[in-house]
Image (cartoon, rainbow, N blue to C red; front, side, top):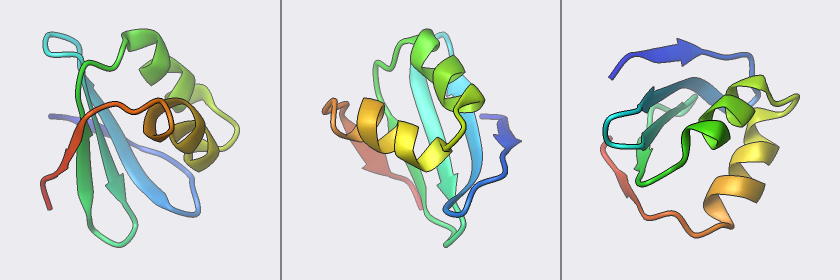
Length: 71
């Protein structure tokens, strides 16, 4: 999955697979997480957020989307 580099204190890059509605987040520590069944509008919101970390926490993590750590 191709990811976009972002300016963040915690996140290195963000990608999205629209076919599977899968969000992928790479953190500065090297870990990568995939979140499942995330609507595309949340991906757009995350990319455009003033704080990527706060948006991820509030609208993805706390919303309870299923995820796996892939690295």
